[in-house]
Amino acid sequence: RKEVEQDPGPFNVPEGATVAFNCTYSNSASQSFFWYRQDCRKEPKLLMSVYSSGNEDGRFTAQLNRASQYISLLIRDSKLSDSATYLCVVNMPNTGNQFYFGTGTSLTVIP
Amino acid sequence: DTAVSQTPKYLVTQMGNDKSIKCEQNLGHDTMYWYKQDSKKFLKIMFSYNNKELIINETVPNRFSPKSPDKAHLNLHINSLELGDSAVYFCASSHRQDSYEQYFGPGTRLTVT
Image: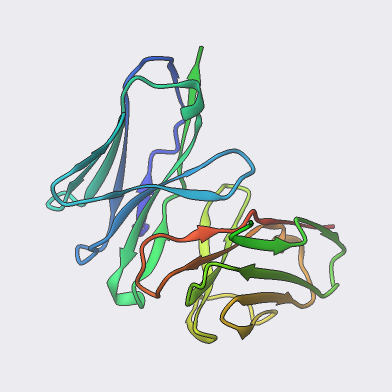
């Protein structure tokens, strides 16, 4: 099993739609979880951290389910500018606290 | 002001050559990283340095040798380049070794012909 797995998509949604991505991780001892965003031919950038109690930042909501070892990202009222690849990132405590990136989920918001 | 910069941005070279990619960060961070992103977009860590000391060295061919002359710089030298080395190489930095937010450079697109 890969350390971090994501559905690669692509997800093609109309403007204004709500879309959700899931990500599963293999190490039950992982403590830190994040979503990064990567635009085409650009570098990844931190979108938001994922807290145990769930957290929201505007139209974006992140959730953590430790029992099932997955995190999710919900985007409401999708904008054209949300089109990008969303990378799930998880720390692995038994590897020097290294961070593992998922392969990303591609989102295209259509006018 | 560019936080994490890499040079060159594009690198096209022939098999068997030796090349270097340079990375500099002006954020005052202690930890720097090299990642490789292949054609399938999988971003995998190669090396991590904390205050010029190597802390992570993933299973990478020893043709790849990182060098950190000071904590603001982490260069990557690649010997005897192979076709499979073609990828985008990202440098990143973070405040500390266990900091969650990593700041990435713009990437170096390496093509080996």
